Image (cartoon, rainbow, N blue to C red; front, side, top):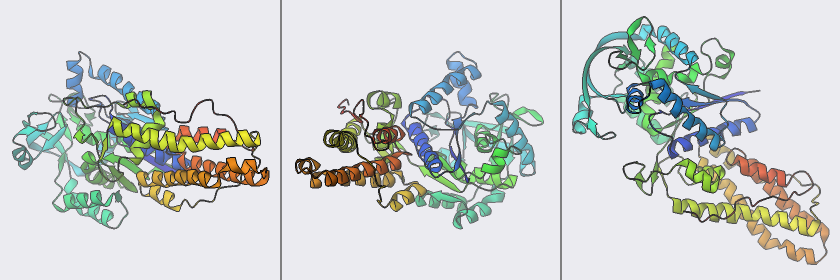
Length: 479
């Protein structure tokens, strides 16, 4: 049995999860479910990033110790995963003892590429990131993400020799060994590398940030949060000796947002090269979700929580919208008005309608006894290629075209009129075709809309049609 390993990035727990987190979880879940459907042995890992100065700040503001704050926030991300029916096999926390032990082991293994030097420059605790003099000048000295001045710091840190690996990273991207999709993101990374990768600070003095993993052999320094967070993708597999690591690395797909592409397409590959490890096969970079044309923001009051949507429409409805109506290769827009229209017109009217019509006619005209259902033979090559390319919008459009085609078939064949002719065999053939098509649709929907797919499969189980206790997608005009 072949192995398949897929990861999300691990969200930072400074704020509750939002639609962007939901989309990333769902995307990775689709890939994991599809791999399992192809009889592959899968590890699907997600988790949370818990260290850093920003977490310590939030904990202090809440009157909590950092670990108490982290424990509280982690539950929100775990609850979201459950709410969305995410099938992850692993959930890693960077406060896990195994991760901390693994991170220190990796540091020691990279010591040939690590040196100590003075850092003089700019830092934003909100971003947990260093900024160049040029960047700070262009931004007028104020971080646009947090509306506060950048902090000028001068401190002695440990550095990682990132520049050493610059040409090697560019080479594996160009020759396709390290695949970055979409192409626009690949080009962005190559442009970044060609402009020159500089060595990066990978630690902070403990008197500045104490909430982190100690640097091995130096109790006055903690690992820079972004550096040690990246290591989770192999510590979760038990690097270096665990069989999971030996069998499942390199990752088949790593799913990340466009705002952290530099860390995953430049720094992470360099770390792996320094360890003598293979790079992930594919890095898929998704865009952002805007709310009615504006960036999601608490200050604008336009935040929409995944919990509210699922409470009103169900998890598959949210999965459907994010997979089909948020472009897989660029940013997308979300509004409750368009979401409601999509739900009612595409899911309730089109998919729900064709299922309920078919079930009702088989029960009415054949007493629920359909007999043998021949396998459907619709070509699924475009669907399969779309999933391989992480074009989730195109994959679900292929399924939707089948749904529309089946509705048209019913309207053309008019089984209710065939029933009046007493041509039972022809009627059975028509209704068996409908059932067969719906079973294939359910099969294709299994990675995308797992609850819906399972309900359809149960309803058309074997030769006997089973009544659905409720509508597949009851109309919902709540917006």
